[in-house]
Length: 90
Image (cartoon, rainbow, N blue to C red):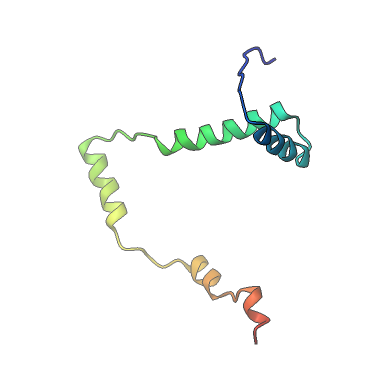
């Protein structure tokens, strides 16, 4: 059960926008705001992850990053597919 409160002061047009978006998704304002805030918070945290490597592991990591890219048949197949919107332009 949720037992911590977060209170916000917003402009009326901000509240209307949030309410409209929540309604479109079939959510309450609180559920929409909590879900959206948590998604954004996770993205921010994941962008700030720190990797602590010893010298050997760092050299191994650097070698992998600097290594030439090998063949990728899946990517080649994907790049060969013609976009649906370009087929209509024939």
